[in-house]
Length: 265
Image 1 (cartoon, rainbow, N blue to C red):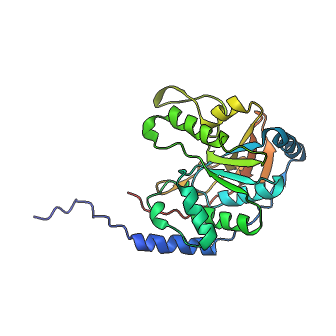
Image 2 (tube, one colour; image 1 turned 90 degrees about the vertical axis):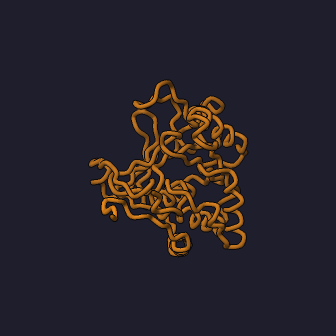
Image 3 (tube, rainbow, N blue to C red; image 1 turned 45 degrees about the horizontal axis):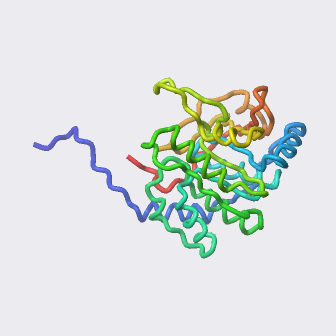
């Protein structure tokens, strides 16, 4: 007798995902976000970059507007290097795409967590076309199986190895971007994020977060943000420094990005 309660077998259409992803790259328009920049905070960051050469930005992976935030910061502060929380081997994938337009989708096809999006490839293409990107750094520290602290220490090591006289925007998940030790409710012990490890070597480095007022993101499926009324209700985006000396790029509304594996189950 047939088991009517059995869940239907899910079969992924890899070719469909490939087509949707490539189409999204070609249709996404990267643009500056008309944000209000606090003049005092912005001037302070400019002065800091003269010495540190690095700014660390935390994001929620899988937000469509993240790449527009990155582009806006490149335009505003003149960054020349972009460091992404991608596996180091994906640097070659990105460079091949920039050189020939050909995307090795098989290299990214299993990525469901929003670190890699169609918008990132559109962003890299625009930055290169406008002569704004000298170098891409892919700094992920490897599998989480090695342990959170070891992975983040390796992330920091990969970033520090690529520091030069060019200013670098480092973009990572918001927990990895923190510059102080953190603790998790469901895990014992202290956790030392990538940002903290970078700060040990560059003591004056600044960090910040993208703060989302409301909306959606794509991290193992589409999920909702907890609403932050004071951000959502603003007429537009804003860049400022908080009382805790953390830079905030406040984005009133977020939308889910296009990822290589949108229906990972």
